[in-house]
Image 1: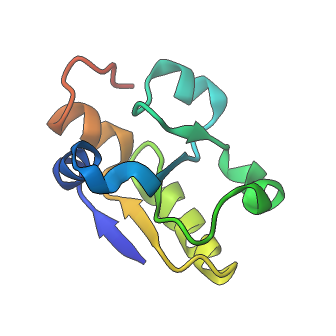
Image 2: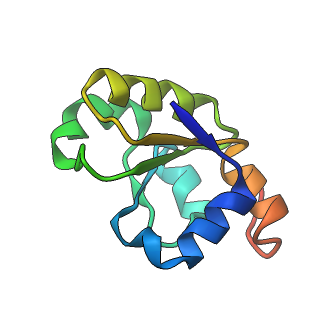
Length: 107
């Protein structure tokens, strides 16, 4: 699986190439309610097997969690399901808040 850091993801989202990018946030709903990257879709990790058919396996998919551990596990699972453009956000939403959007709440 590929990895992307928060600053590089921010640049990618600001570019014209971001139109097909899926942002998949696998944190729990209560976590997602605290903060999220605009355009993210929340599917908690435990619900991924049931929701995998609702995702586009041909689009680049950035998987997001709190610190990057759950998202790495989901990214690995998605690759095993045939997704070939899976990217894990290193450091998760915590890195995004600290490095890209300091106004975002941290927890």
